[in-house]
Amino acid sequence: MDKQKLKHNLILISFGIILYVVLLNISRVIDSINYILHIISPMIYGLVIAYVLNIPYTWLKEKVLVKLQDRWGLSTTAISVIALICTYVVLILILALLISTIIPQLIDSITQLIQNLPFYISSLETLVNDVIYKYSLENYIPGLAQIDNLWTEFKLKGSGLLTSQMPTIANYLVDLTAKFLTWALGLIISIYFLWAKEMLLRQMRNLLIAYTPRRFSNRMLEVASLANHIFNRFVAGNMIDALIIGILCFIGCSILRMPYTLLVSVIVGVTNIIPIFGPFIGAIPSAFIIIIVDPFKALLFIILIFALQQADGNIIKPHIFGTTIGLPSIWVLLSIVIGGRLLGVVGMLIGVPTFALIYYLLRDGANKKLKNMKS
Image 1 (cartoon, rainbow, N blue to C red):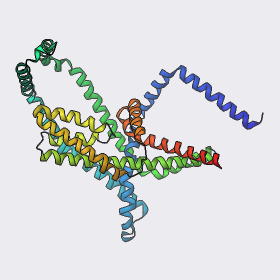
Image 2 (cartoon, one colour; image 1 turned 135 degrees about the vertical axis):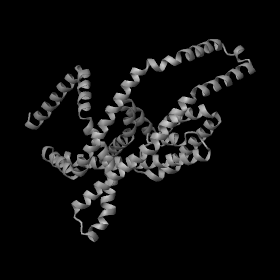
Image 3 (cartoon, rainbow, N blue to C red; image 1 turned 180 degrees about the vertical axis):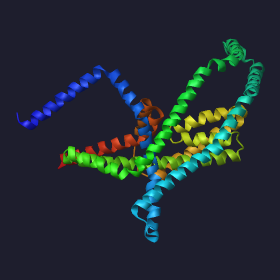
């Protein structure tokens, strides 16, 4: 047996032993991974923020400020600094605008909703009782009396329900504060990642070339470039699409004089980032908020959302994305289901570009094999 074959067999045996040990201790391995991810979560958030902000940063640096470089006699470093500062200033202004306009209205809307909730429930109860009495539904629907008793019991106990849930709400607020601080730390870390991205990428590229075979390193660099292209277009396209849908929803709700217009428009716009299921995730709570105030306008809202999604799927998204993703519909659905199952909302967001990359690589590999077989 030659040395190359012996080395190959030893690698396979070692991999098999490691895999066997991991499977025997899978719960401990998962707990350890979750613990490590929790510790480095600010770094992960920083990478995510830097990757998203790299899109406007690169555009400012290479499309806008580079034109002023010769005119103002600025160095490349100065251009990078100006682009970095402008990117984070715009981000802070957007966050400040959201906090100063949307958050107060959100709090006001929720407060108003809670204050008027007893009246809305009473009106709904009166409407249901009138319908039951008018059409004698108790004679046709078995168990209606039991439902009425349960509803009465719920109203009696409802006042103490919030009090009993106060510890849970307090824990949720603590977790929310911790998550906010982690994201804030990630935002600070992202400044370094974005500033030093060329150096970090160069170091990773050199390590890959130095410690792996040339054929493998070339292929990995090719895949990384393709992945970056797909994810860049997907992230930028989704953000633009969500902004357009949010604005159109706000205009439509304003014309139809919907209650809580800004609140439901923000919900619809943000959730529209999630492919396929996003519109439903945003429309259901929004429609519920509206239906408590005016059931007829809730119906109009559902029709508006349906029209927006038809325009989004057939006009807006094809114009934004073009053929960049190139993923068949069944793969899109599968990627969202699997991604959501594994990583929740984050998985639903990154599932489509990840599967698009896998689909492209499999298709490219299959085409090369078929071409070699024919030749």
